[in-house]
Image (cartoon, rainbow, N blue to C red; front, side, top):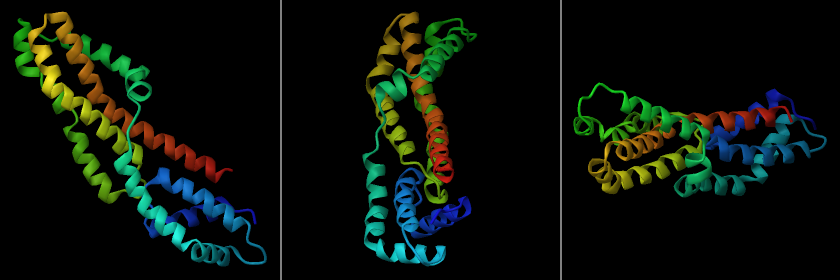
Length: 208
């Protein structure tokens, strides 16, 4: 049995209805289920779907629970996804340029107003991710990995980095402040990046 795009989307929707709301995990389960459906002989598509879902009931229940375990264990690579990412380098340079050209007559005055910026930037993302968790049927587990990892880095900034920024001379101070600002901005980038990446995987599965 060779499945059409519409049939694959029907199976995908059935998995969503079953409770698979993380697209990156669902793609793996979907690929497995599709292979089993295609192996069914002398039955219609709908009969094959019902048979496979019944036969794989225990597997599906286990995988449904596993997707939430994956969220808790998710992390992103500090080097590959953040610090060696060209987007991070660009944001670091851009942040430094903006800080260095703000109309402050005194470096200390700038820090009094803006040294908490790295902590403030992600606030909107927390609100978005809260809604996203309860509403979206195509959540990406990697998104939460980015949230956990970047939150850890920002906690380091809160307890250590911000004190370095306040004690150093202007250039190294702004360099560190800009670096942590870029880390905060990377959270928004990674949310979009992981979403696009998994949407492409799903499209590849449709066209396989």
